[in-house]
Amino acid sequence: MKRLLAAIACFLAFTAIARAEPPVAVVEDVQGKVTGAEFMDYVVPGQVIKLGPGGRLVLGYMKSCWRETISGIGTVIVGSEQSAVHLADFKTEKVACDPTQAQLIGKELGESAATVFRTLKDEQKKGPAPLVLHGRSPIVSTAERGKLVIERLDAKGEHYEVDLTGAQMTRGRFYDLTRSNIALHPGGAYSMTMKSKFAAFVVDPGATPGAGPVIGRLVTLQ
Image (cartoon, rainbow, N blue to C red; front, side):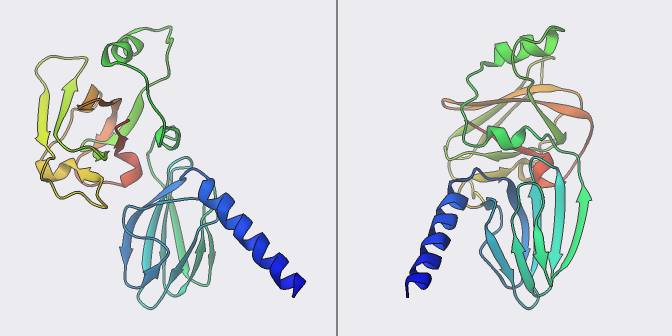
């Protein structure tokens, strides 16, 4: 009995630690029977996901830029940079993403658009480098509702506004700008604001249009 109680206590402690970990990956796609994760969920190390008949799961790891496609009946244990998979089919590919994306989740940026613009122009960079997107149509993550404003910082004339007040948001917080036919300019520097929330980023010169991997297009408003 004592051993059973000790085992339960260890399991609960491990679960609590896992839940306290910051997210390391995002669920980019779910098909069939999958338990333990849903489309556009953030997942943490130690999280267990089970696939049943017809199950298919795509995970994008934000730090390592590994994109995993897991299918068939099996079990997935989320790691820090890659998953451990039992029984199910497992395919991986490296995709273009910015590893600093993982650090931005749940943190305050504390920079103004002007500061970021100076950082981009100054060879002696004094602040953190802005996020680099590898897709021309960002996916914005925000709990706010209202007018989303995207402004180009290094050139005049490029300005977008999207009213998210009544928009249908995936998981209540994600909006894909491909739905508004917005494609930003490769190599451009941008700010994105909504009310008091802000993000700054640059678009990689080789960024592709359309709905590419989530981890290459995700912008978190903070």
